[in-house]
Structures are given as C-alpha cells and as structure tokens.
Image 1 (cartoon, chains in turn yellow, purple):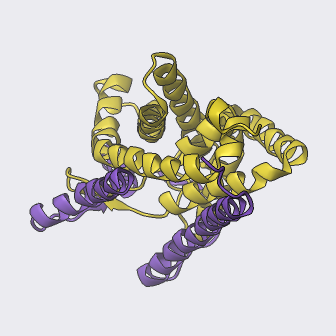
Image 2 (cartoon, rainbow over the protein chains, first blue to last red):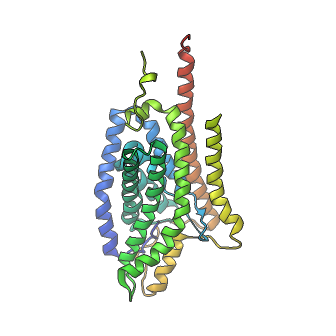
Image 3 (spheres, rainbow over the protein chains, first blue to last red):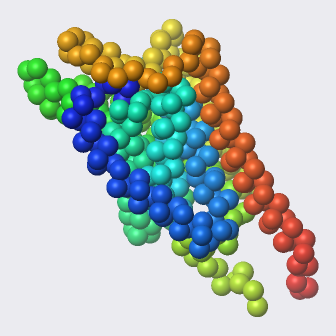
Length: 227
Length: 102
C-alpha cells in the first residue's frame, strides 16, 4: 500500500496530505491525553505500535503469486479507538519513507490516509458491528484486523486510480486495474492478520484483563471482582 | 488443555496460509504489490516522471532487507517485552493472593 516517492502528481500529494493531517494531529493529542490520564496504558500503547511496526515490515507471499505486507492497525483501533492509530501508523510510514525508501515524503499523506486513517476506522467499525450483533470478542477482533488491512489496500488502489485514470475507461477502469493488483493479493494476508490478532487478543484477555476492562473491551466480571 | 489446542491450531493456520502458496506455487516471482502498482503506472502513463526522489535509499537489496529485518526485530522486541511484563505481573498477583479455601 506504499505509493512510491514522487508517484502521485503534486496536487494529489498535497490534497491527501491536507486530508490526513487533521487526523494525525488529533491522534497525537489523543495519545498524549491517554498517556497523561492513564499512564498504565503506556504498555499497551507500545504493544499496539510495535504490532504495526512488525507486521508492516514483513512481506508475505499470497496465492496470487505476488507478495505484500499486513498493516496491524486493527489492534490499536480496537484497544484505543482509531485516532491513536492515526499517529502510530504515520510514525511507521515516516520511518519507512526516511530509512527504507519505502513509500515517501510526498506520498506520506496519501499513505497515512489509507493505512493510519481509513484502515483503523473500518476495522473499528467492523469490531463495533460484530460485537453489537452479539458475535463475541474474538470474532469481532478477527473482523477488525482483517478488514482494516483490506480497507487500507482498497483505499490505495482508489487513490492511484484517481491520480492515474485509464485513458479509455477512466476512473472505473483504472480502479479495477489497481484493485486487481492490491485487493486480491491482500485477501489471504488479511485472513492471516485476523488470525494473528485473535492469537494476540487471547494472550491479552488473560494477562491484561484490568486494562481491557478499563478500555471497555472486556466487561467487568462480577465473579472475579475483589470482595 | 483446550486452550493450548486452540492456540496451536491458530498458529498452524497462520503458517499454512503463507507456506501453502510457496510450496505449491512453483517458480512464481512473488513481486511486491507496491512495485507492481508502480510498474502499472509506468506502463499506462509512460510520460509520467516522478517529481521527487527518496531522501535516502539503501545501497543494495541486502542492506534494504537488513533494515526491514531491523524494523521487524525492534517491533518484536517491544511486543515481547510488553507481553512478558503483563504476564509477569499476573503471575506475581496470583502468587501474592493465596487461593480461597473451599
């Protein structure tokens, strides 16, 4: 989902930067507020950032014969709500743009919009929907992780189609072309990311129960309450 | 016991998901989708010139893989540290509160 440096025309690069900036600034405020009011959250914030850091570094093979990386933004979106991931995801993208020539500074806005804004919000929406429908925590986490991953790549494909519409078929033709590259490859990776998220959450529900209760992810268990 | 079984099955499922295409796919290239998208742009719009270059590019693909490994490693260390601390805390709490007599 990394649009390469210089590969968005300047007006598009500027537009996406302006679109992503308020989310990132708001996200930074949310992170500062969370750490100040709940210092005990720092550990889990670190875990959410680290999860995205690891997953976005690993390119995995897909059945389509190409490879791509997961995003890992669903975890933080479920734990701390999506704004926090707008900052953490952008930090990861900035690291990759500066040190790895992966993505870029001119495309940082567009990449942040897809990975750090759209992905976390779609994942969070899926999580809320599944829990509200009575699906349970782990299926909701699976949906959040998988769909935040997939939505990120769909967004990138649409961003590229907007910037490079097909000569004959225009935007729809270009969108189909770019979705063919990004979205199809991503389906098995999104499923894998969903399973990884479930694994991690199973560990967290046992070991970080007080934090998850405070964050509203787990319901307080009356039987375990202190007498 | 059942808990461990579920964990093992989940790990196996993740491994299988990524091992199966590698084992059955023959000699496909597994090119990155990011570079495929760039190639698509260059193909459909040969006149497009990237107007900005990366501020820093790793000298070789080996150095690049190393930096990616570093990124994954740093993330893994932090994640492991957090999970280890949380688990240690839970075990310490369990040891501090003796189980209730039946």
